View 1 (tube, helix red, strand yellow):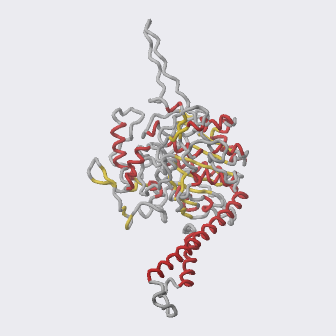
View 2 (tube, one colour):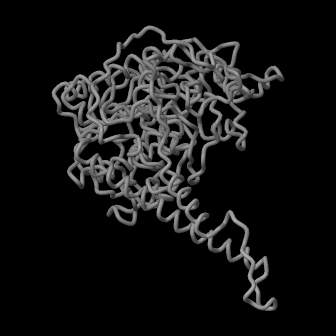
View 3 (cartoon, helix red, strand yellow):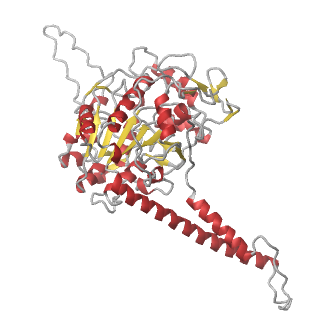
Length: 541
């Protein structure tokens, strides 16, 4: 049965167009001006004056139409929010690792994907190693290398809007990281720069099925133009900062690349080595300094949730860290437990979580499965992976897809499915190619596009959301749903900090409410196999 895809509603454009057509009919904008005979020639308005008057009238009418369109849109969103508050009781954010939109959905029908003509890419990214260029290509490999993905790499990949630095950055990362092949920062070997590779339903059939059956967002941007730690800080607080004074939010300053690493990210290499035997009489060696935990003193979403008695949990899977120190391409795995924080789990270092006595809300993933089965999911959940399940290179794509499918199946098969909204995304682009220039909202971003989907019994079916979005939209949705629209806003939240702006109020940020149809009956679960057969090739294949 063919999948029905609907385009986003264009309330503003439709209303504006209708009003302008009416204005055209009423004012005669499409007709010749009538001849004036009753006014003496010396007093008759000139053609220029008549044109100016007509322009002013049209401008005023268009402004009025725009105001009407905005009011209509706001009325529709207000109605949707009222329905959402009655039907959505659980928001689950599943965050995976290091993929660009084009690398996963660049050939998805109807999406803003890789520029192609007759199924052949029309873009080609320079390759300094060969003097030629590399076009996007189908990559059937389950294991990828990716590229470096820090602040400087994001700038170089975007390259002033040309979006052509990806291959050069991957090759530079290899040269820098692989002087010692045993270095935890060593890049993966390979002859073809795989940052230009893309996948489709042949490698990620479940992800494509979710996109076909629910909502695919093709303009979701990483909130920050940098790596995983800042991305996760933005995910829970809409900012990444470094604080000079412990416990003092006003001492925090913007920090896009280095906000202060958790202890397990302050040493290199991170694998613990046995101490060498000490000769008799030799002086006692000076012990290595104890890593100092960071202090994230600025305000995060959990502070507002606590103030409003809204339940939340941050679920962490046991295993190894999913990312590398300071955005290195690959690294030695480090054991990960619910109470062993890392860059994927920043909440233990927020003053608010400690002061509110909510450290216990950071839990092992087994608690999530139990809550999903028992119908006791909290109002807000974040779920972060271990290394093998993260899709962060060199982790296998198939293993990450199986893990995510298991999470979604657990919700769908539990009592809370009919009242849940699942937001699935990848935290940063991982060095992989994307062709869309990120919009600028402030000095921190946005970063490059990442894959993102909405899965819910009330999600529109086969819908591609073209709105400009970032993880700030998740915060905005949660705040509107549970907090009456209160923002993480220094002027109003009762806990001021010097963040540069209120990200949830950015004018270009879309509204996730448009991804839902609350008038429809709850859609039944779509339980998928965790290890599916490959799907069909896409048009670009």
